[in-house]
Length: 224
Image (cartoon, one colour):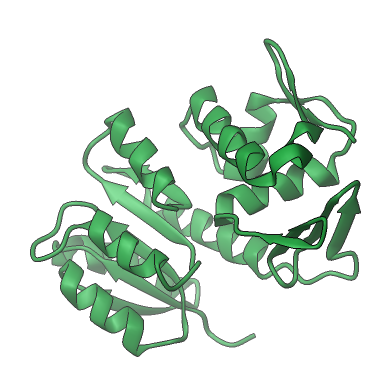
């Protein structure tokens, strides 16, 4: 497999070096940017970037604005780094299409594990890559979802969540199990993270979203 490129964006050179060293050990190619404006320039000049690790607080252009710029043109996975642990920031990140949200300080090994998990899942190519249940058709290889032959635009995390639901059709899934399976690696979120994503997913799927049923006090079940 070709070496995958990761863009690391942080105004602290020490932080960039720390993340880069751990990624390079895992055979990733790392590009660096020290501010938001440079990050945007690098991202749009290099079409081979597979994932972006993005700090929130930066000069010239903050992480939120960088995320908006990228999301207008690309669905590349984005991991957001922040020194804040404000729930409003986390929800804003998910609204903008951030795939993972990690608060500083963090373990570089955990960060790399999340990078690997996201890339492994987003590049999942298997013989049974197409799931077709009821009115929903999901193609894991093409990263495409159709409802009644109409394409639905989903964020990376919404797509992974729907995939998990469809692969576990008819099974009652607790919020804890969903967090561990979809967000993985001891994600330190809570039920509101899942509920927010389910709400948006149902909305995008329209009437077909009724297949995602709430099990009060426990979690959810996908059932047609």
